Image (cartoon, rainbow over all chains, first blue to last red; front, side):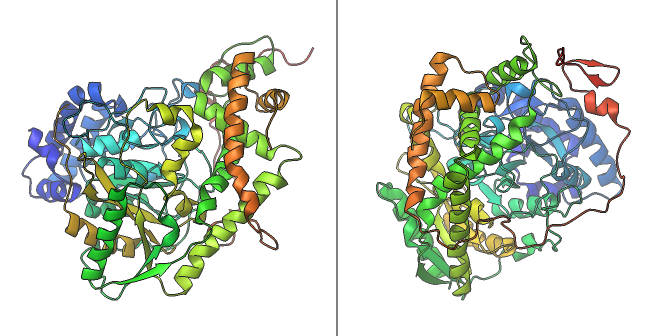
Length: 493
Length: 95
């Protein structure tokens, strides 16, 4: 039965409809694969076996009648940031101990409405703050990829590290994820999987634990481009419960796959060529350029002059929003409470104990930049820089550029417990240097596996599109996938 | 701009996060590293630039002013650490 877990979403869907196996068999195959693997990889923080079997059985009943939605019987993993009714939802934080929401997030509800099956909740950096999944209260996640001939455990990236590992190790058919500064695309690049952050507003944020509300967006991590198109179509919706969700038709994402990119203008921004970037990344990028040129696209050198300021501006805007969003964790309404001498002491002890180092650090930065006397110097300036970053992209698109090709990350996956990263928070931030511009401008971006480095670790290329041009992104991402082929980690776990 | 230890303590107080002396010292170093990193924004000419308020070009949606939810007291207190008769319980706040 283990073979069933090697099927993509689109393959499994066909075979379920043809009754080659049942949804329950497919779900059981994932549950048994995960049972052993999770002890090593730590991708899931909670497995909802009973719920999964119940949902799969209901899918089988619908499939038997020739009914069923676009994801009927497909077993998915859900990032712990999404509220799932009566099931563990803690953003992998100690402060949300035992929180079981009485409601369902809009994105997950959309998936269940299309027939998907929930396998469990996936590990992540605490409150999605991190780029290595090492800030989780539930411990780090291990990347199924390792350097050739090495047993050293590598990070899967973050914050959606559990999602990326679960997809890459075939512990779910696809996974939900979220991206505030690169948290879908960086882990996808580190694990040889596909991850798309859609345009801000494409997916409802309702029921997703808030980190930085003006940047957070949900999206899928999947094994291939087609699966990402299928999942995003289901996840996206306009929602009365999120006023920032947009009322625009959802494209025919899967239908766009295979369309020619002939004549498309692909921009290559010179600012993404960084000092000290490994030569392999440079080579990979050039390879991507050649693939598009061969496919008939026009390659155009462009400039996005404010690129370098995106990361510092992000580290003002995101912590500022986080300090406000995380004010609600006070030990009164939900989660952990550490009793103190009085109410203020209770708040302070609860938040000191309940938040991890990275979260405390960001709350303090956010509180500082918003505090009286510093607001203009930091927050207001950062929001003005953000306008300039967005304007760079608008200028490129107004000049006729259809989309932009960049590397996804400045390096391949690094070791768990990397001392340099642990010692310097800014060094960890640099993981997001190519992805964060996209969140600051609200644009869609997709990471597609494009090659392996000399150690045999996957590397990704990123495509950045115009607002709501997800269809074109899938169309172009498929060109990379066709040229590069798929990448599957050798099973050692 | 760098922060001194008293600023770190004041900000921690504002954020309602207890910091002992050791942690405050570590935090001071880390905050200064981050503030040093964001310093480069001062190079940018922001003269006449509007601050971003919405990343997507659309008018803020407003919902109708109607009651569309409610009678969920039990759901709301269901996850609280201490509850009595659908009230959140906290230590005495007024003498």
